[in-house]
Length: 316
Length: 275
Image 1: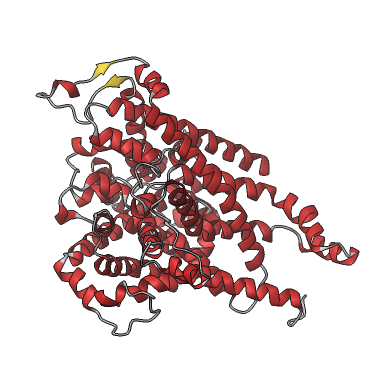
Image 2: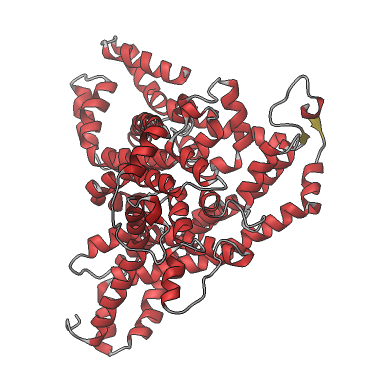
């Protein structure tokens, strides 16, 4: 890339010792050189595509515009792609499902990771290992996690149904029924992400002054009351951070679903990203609609991130 | 605080035991299953340990299914992309923490705002950019496109900030060139942050699915994640092969995590942001 080449060349000329004046100019230019590769790459692979994506949302076109295929030629359609979305049942159903997924997965994840943090915050022998075990899944690709759980949730041969059968429970069609497969995606997603958010909660818990707990102990306050009156209020900013960060993650759910259910059975676990991808690359001349769908998701993520930034600011 | 044998701490320990079982069972079951021959892998009731443990599944996927090739591709991509990421993040972090210049705040906000634009929402235009740059279906596309990571820049900036200015000033008085200061003073003093970030970036790139999915079409250029997705996507899944592939794909992450666990779990707290 040209950006990298520029950087390499200046690197060489900088090694020689230039006259004092050139040196001073060099120094004012230096920070720009330091930032050029990062900013350059972001412009090419993030900002420019974002703007082009905005632009595309106002056209009817194919992803690749082919001279010989008139259907792919860009045609300006104004806000048609957006009004189309409002009447597009597939999109509305998918959006509702995605929101439903977020609304089920995020509170459960917040609760589970908070409980894990409360359990694993106090130091005991081996606490590091237990934390590491819980944290490890968030280092693993969601595809592998999906594969592992697909293997465990199999109807006839899965270990989960076997363990249930030990307790005389009939086999559960985890990945074969509409509702159960949606539940399975939520549960596996929470399993995969709990360790990461547990660590954020543990970091939040360490900022609560120990003296408050000592005072509560002296007063003979019950544990539950201490939790409600001290821990929870002081942990509120962390809770909000976890809710927002995990919502952003949840809206982007894709790889896990791809491995676990591939969107099935039927279309019951198709969420937004999968729909955008399929609209763009599997349907002819619908790239504009896919761009409009992306824009809707962008607005959602944007609002969430702004909320997080505002909170981070009011924190300090 | 609590007496060791009090009912409360007993309950706690039981809970911690449950947590361990809950989080250990899936990976352990994955690994154990991958060593079972085909007739045992679907056995009902399932046996925890394989009766006749075999490496046949591994041998089959490594050589017959070209997994060695995909593994090489992934290693190549992850190492180079992580290295590139760290190099440019150290540079950017240094620039943002130790220099006053026009547009400083703007550049910082610009870089951070990229966090709001995940790949998932720019799939189509990025596909076109990569096509125009002739990077489609090349490993270089997978290396370059995700290399600029705002999280890494932010962590480097926070870290380098704590290096005393006096060290840099002293070097300037000695007429050391700016690049030399970066290489001889900033880099050696930032080794812990650099190590953490290298490991993080390697794992991110190793786990990447969407980028290679978008960029690579030719099977020769597949990464391990693409191979896994293709295998799990088949109607009649070859489980012995898929499970052994999954375990092999886990290994680099596991080795890094076990050896650098301290870094992983502390660097995370500093950044507290997921890619």
